[in-house]
Length: 259
Image 1 (cartoon, rainbow, N blue to C red):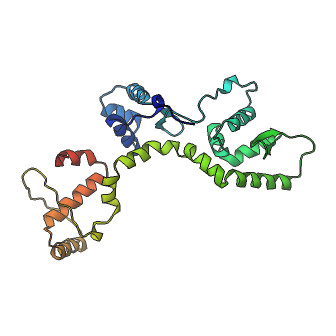
Image 2: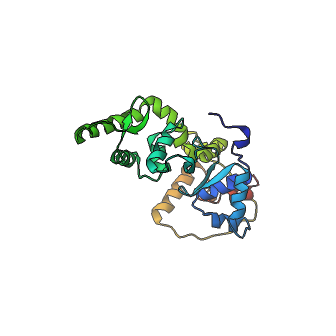
Image 3: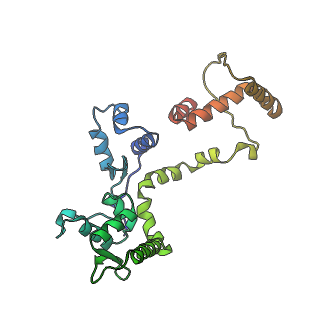
């Protein structure tokens, strides 16, 4: 199933700020205050125009498009949870883990146990549950069937089909990583492998700052400065900029450096 153009998530600057903020643990209320809004309604409305919706279970914004889109449980002829399970399995691309999470089960095993208790058995032919007919098999045989079902559902072909749904919640993060892969490489690849130590031209006047540290750390700074022919000022400048970038002050650092 292909995502139509009008449903594709739009990643503009504000969307990335919101997604990054939530990835750092900020709530919608925190972001609303940060952007000058009185409530979260403005953020929800903006994200909706960019094809994102708020997922109450995951506590985050996710792309509005879903392969489970269009299922209306209230329209089912039988409103029971068992009928909802069957309806979801009929939908292309669904699997036991997705169905279990969608309907509030702890995991797919609890779902299987529930359906078994309601008198349903798994049909390998239909790829869905059906009403049990005739004598119920012994518990041992049922356990064996459940294990076989789980094995079948995690086969290679099933995994290939399931992956988009399972990873849907991570799509915004993956998009963000793709757009910032060059800067991420600076963190992933140790600079010692290339022998290159970055230099930063920080604007402003120099000040003297006394810092208390353990003597072994002081010794490491002195040795590194001497061995690499780098001033201690540059050592601390690079260390602080990298620290700020990694722990939430990336925007402030970029503004400071004029990038």
